[in-house]
Image 1: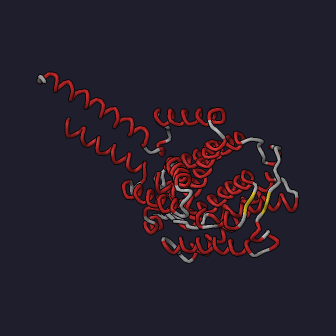
Image 2: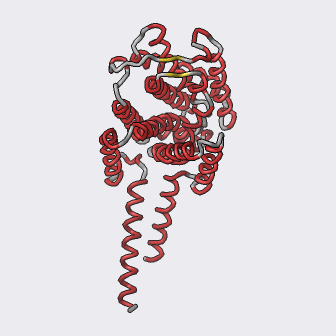
Image 3: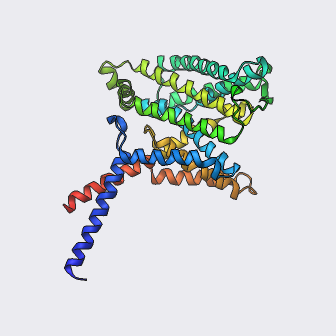
Length: 358
């Protein structure tokens, strides 16, 4: 090959590298600058169109999987608001999720109160419980592993209480009557639930995006990075941790209510089990903790993996969870900062390579 051809090939390779590096930079650039980049807008647009067309394209089984991805991403975003933005790792978010589900369901089944009103009541109850947990934890300066254990303990307390209290339907759980009325938070088809789940996820994601631009968002990050330094700068760490916890809890209650109305049955294990809390944490770890789009990417990865392992290993009791766990461990080892972190590292490496070649 002639020298001219070699130089031409190197030039094309450099252009491709520069284009890819520029694209990755625009996709993963911090949204705290107040503007979405063109690649980000394109990706959001493609996802939105896909969601709108999904009911006509997919079977009920696959449609249910998409709804599961959206609701998992939503719950992960709730956890991300608290633990990703302020660094207060919660292992008991199922408590708020379950309180939302039980409040709306019991008010509807036992007292005939509209689920939409029950949704608001569930948010209020979850907010009050979160304020109590937050005050007891943050007042005594619980942080790190101690705060995680405290939230897990509170969640287990709620599970035991709901499982053994007849007025709360005890271990038998709550069965919700089916209705096709929108007024009763029933949407008649999976398509209706899909659109509602998508709206919920879009709203919380947009909210997190906006928070990153505010002074409160900067205070959240300051507390996460170094709480002592934040206090020294005059930031009321207690106040902002409480705000994040209460907001996260109230939004988690919305997810719980949606779950109850979609599946029409809840019980203490379904709502307050450790697997519920883990389902909020795992997408954030896989996608990128403390990022706006990380939980969505994480949910889009782990839910299909879970379904595939469940289907492929259905004849081997417990083996599906073993394989699923191994896959997650491998993913975390390869991408300790999540998918967003890996892409950002690639972006940095491409930038360095560009400077070296230049």
